[in-house]
Image (tube, rainbow, N blue to C red; front, side):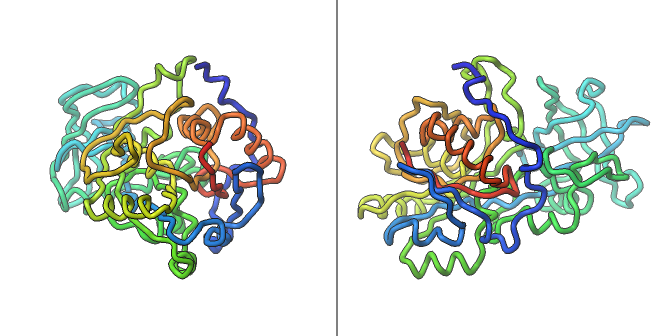
Length: 354
């Protein structure tokens, strides 16, 4: 399948740099048999009592670190936890790093904060072993790390050399869902950024059920597809968990005739990874590297709430698989013409499965 099938032109001024205020005032394009311009606040009336919304409760950590190897500067972005004291990370400049190298992230702090390169992979990936683990490592990340905003969100030049996508104080709140609970993501599950306590209460009042899972989104979500044939692209694995209680709640809603509504592509990928052929779910804890392309047969998810994605991205391929490539191309043409805001801080859509 050629990557050019998933290309489109997006005017750069439509890339959202801040979220809508309040969050649920964002626009929502309902993509069903026809296109309908709505608001995120309209979501309760677009769903039916007995439907179940499934949310990802991961919480973004300050996973971007600036350090030094000797006299040289190094920037790393953690993307997947390997052990209590080890993370896979993307490093710049990776070509100057070798196994055994030490990177100091807080050389002037009383307690220091450092990691050793224990392995080196392709595409700038390294495995880092830190000088502390678990809660101590998380505390050091909060003390010395930077919120890892996507590269298309610009904040101007950062004096600490974090580039022009360094998060500011407002992003530390904006780039978390209101229900974020379990720390471990290095990118937000952005469909969930639109929810407010008021919207959740309106959904409850409508009789919409809720369930929660966890998928710690990795920095690999921003990696471009560099292969002309998309099937040759390698997805980075992400760690997730579905509790037995959540699986039972989703199964019960489906059995009663309710629709399973995925809040974001991260939720969809984990549900589809775990679902049996008949769509039923079970408790799960592990990794998924599921890459969904047109032709995939969906087993569990009936509707998908998701933001507008990048051209040639794995996420645009996923929504094309879910709702139909030509239907999604028409939807994106409409959204661009109507001035919808794109990407992480942008507007939303509700897709009916083709």
